[in-house]
Image 1: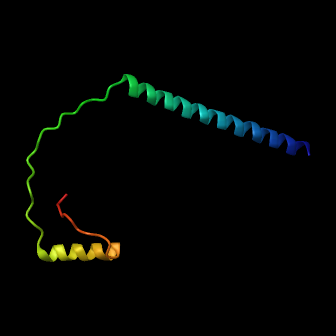
Image 2 (image 1 turned 135 degrees about the vertical axis):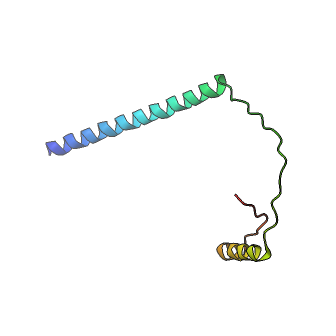
Image 3 (image 1 turned 60 degrees about the horizontal axis):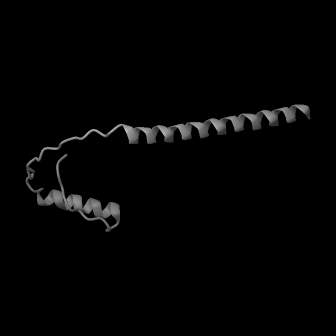
Length: 86
């Protein structure tokens, strides 16, 4: 019986220790995030305007195949709005 009491005590102490350490990690993480957001500015990235080059429209048979595949996968709820090459 003494071994069971010792085992339970070790389990409670271990779980409490883990819980406290996790709370410390979460708290310190929040403090670090708040510090970084307050004192370290985000870099500004300037984006140049690019002219959009439209690709030629997809052939009718390819468009039909893609539309059919989308209809099968989404059970008729999906809609093909734009096809572009990646």
